[in-house]
Figure 1 (cartoon, helix red, strand yellow):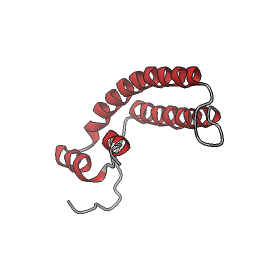
Figure 2 (cartoon, helix red, strand yellow):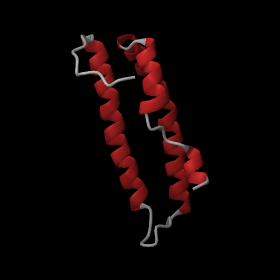
Figure 3 (spheres, helix red, strand yellow):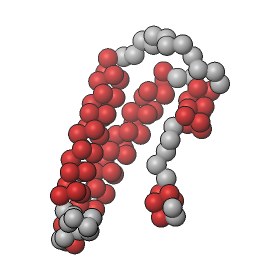
Length: 106
């Protein structure tokens, strides 16, 4: 699929606000998550307080449940602005998904 020139797409304001709000939430939250993670480690990169680490993991799990639901809803709303072919191409070739296997099997 050839890259298209930038084209204007009319988007409903509430869809734009929803998408921007979700991205803002994720950006600020990820920054705070990184800060909390780094704060709990010593100079060797190991967690000083294992209970704090477990609390962070639980909080991340709960946040991910909420944010996954919100992103799924946003994705479905924004899908209306793409053709099925374009959405499929983006999903297959353009999006660098995070992969757990790369963490557990480097």
